[in-house]
Image 1: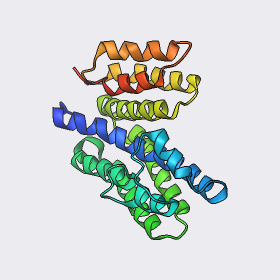
Image 2: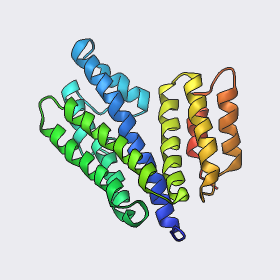
Image 3: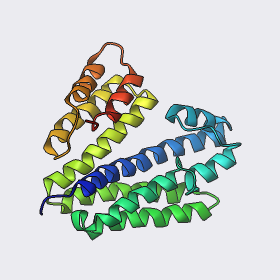
Image 4: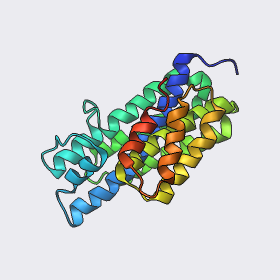
Length: 222
């Protein structure tokens, strides 16, 4: 495969980020959905605080409908899935038709979930399709740079989300180690200072989650 344009390099990175964002927030939503049914109808407020999402939802029903399925809500799962698709469709030559097809299937199941009175089954299928996307990326994409850019986007997004969620230290260390092994394999220009700062933060006795999120989002800035 030839040299990847700057524009498509950026699209690959964000395809990795958006697919990971949809995957992780869907898993979190499923947990919150169960909590809202079983114990706390206001758990959606905690969900929004944890992910730093504007608390614009008036009830659990409003949250379930609009956070999941409202394309006009920039924070919704659906709008992030559409962003992933918009990047994937332009990248057909780089990623191939089969990985793209799993993003399309995820949208199909997301639309089905939006029409269902019990959407968790269809939402699980969205998760399954995203996992299949990553599996087919490893299986069919020969270009290591393409795979590494996608996975760098995935790791950056996961570290960002996990930092906001204050996941345990060992889990954060694991994700940063994965990013450390992946990013240098790409053609991406990254800031060495922020790269080193990430490693120092996860090694600190008291992890500064706020600073970690800040550093990972500045990583690709010159």
